[in-house]
Length: 95
Image (cartoon, rainbow, N blue to C red; front, side, top):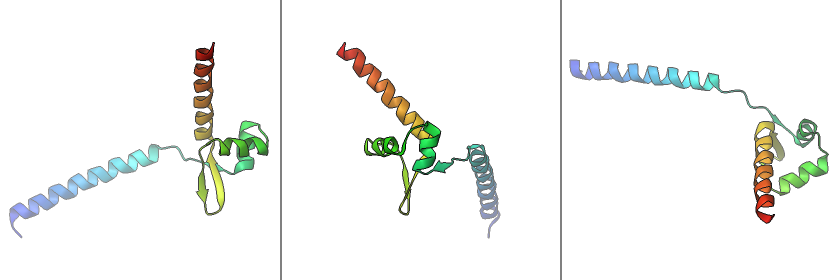
């Protein structure tokens, strides 16, 4: 292996190490997302199970883990807020 090849390999390794360190810092900075089932979402939102079921039919975001539906509470709250603000805008236009 030539000196140029060796220098290139070392430069690539150094760049990869820096990129991996930066990625690790980004991942560590991300909050841990906690997912809840429908009952947990109902508790978090202070609504009944039928309301959660209706919201799912209307498009509330969720993920499926096997046969189990799970919700990210923060994502669901953001979805509800976006619907609320969209409805407020529609109400204003209808007036």
